Length: 318
Image 1: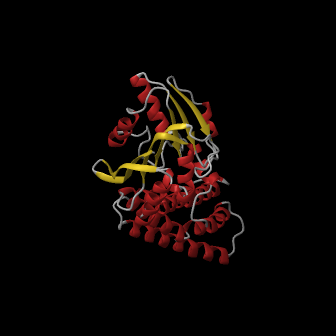
Image 2 (image 1 turned 90 degrees about the vertical axis):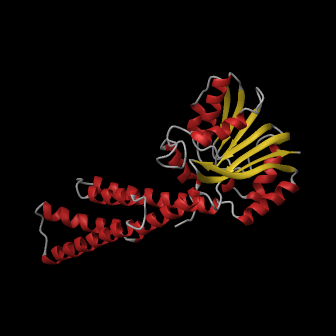
Image 3 (image 1 turned 120 degrees about the vertical axis):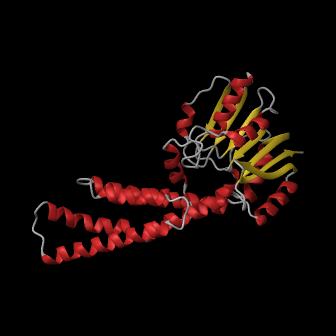
């Protein structure tokens, strides 16, 4: 299994409509300290300036800019690009900002015009890029005196520690092989229920599989007690149980979906871990900034609801 989501997998995720990668959080957009931070950045923007959002996803930051523009009666020209297929965002219109979206576009090679943006922003997107390629590209498209504002995953972020815990949870459930055991047991149960001819060997196998599956589920629930947040475990076991209540091909479709979504969730968590701005990556970032005439004005831990959520960096191109 690949350790990262590919463009198609990210596209599938964004197509489900989530504004962010934080399932169950920010479903209606960024709020609280996170919203206030970005509003403080937007307040420095001059009317009709050009803004680029890197790794825009489903446009959560652009939604925030649109609301800010409406509230302040300002206008901006905003561009969003993403590695995933965000073609659906092209249908969105806003009253006070004009937008362009570039799907299937890498931060490292945007294809955008040189010196064309006044401000570049990114919320948990930039750090997923190859820094040695993305920094020269940012320097190329950002105008002189243009600003760069990044909120990035960091080692001491609660999001990183939570993603590590979630990764353990998902991997434990997948490694249990409970989905595979269920798929082996279901057809035998179907034959028994439909009064088809079932020999003693099949009945014995069914009993072995049932005992094995029950043991796997017990192990999952016992392992879940090690974690404060047990929601994933409960949902996983609920979906396994549901498969045995469905008819026909639906039960197999549900199990296939459960496996696929679990794998993709694990990959998102692995992606987050690998994107984290470690000390080594921060040193590289500093060196690349200096090489490409980008001056850091402010770099500090970012807090949301009293938890460290990452690293906020503000810079300017000389």
